[in-house]
Image (cartoon, rainbow, N blue to C red; front, side, top):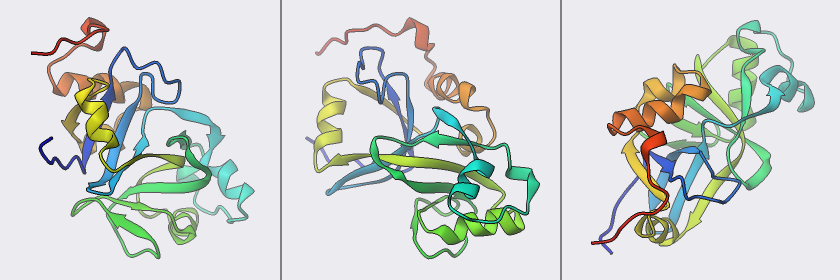
Length: 186
């Protein structure tokens, strides 16, 4: 199979996806290379606000702008660990630089800055992530489990979570309700 790099792309779960973790999910791929892929689900909030999460990890919350921000289920891997997708990148202890504008940080210092100073301004907080081993994502793509489209920061940071999947589909010119459950192979 030809080598592809889906870093900074969305994965859109096809209708036949019956895995409850990924059914009807939109995943942002933060890293994709020969070792595998790492992404976070960006359209599945959990029953927790950012203020509640920060209280649970003893981070004083001084900046009210983010109090009601939802926390998302990022995927089934390390669900006890937090990840912050943000823009701008900034300088944090543990950041995966996705592109020139977007970073994915797993260190506590970014949450402390959000709570104290309200920065970075554009954030999405998840518990857990989605991961694929070497060649696993490519195999799933060959099996028609996912559609891919370059990520749009507007979809990530500006739209309500319930509009993200339909908007990503629209960027492909596809209405999700019109997708067939089975795909053909030429």
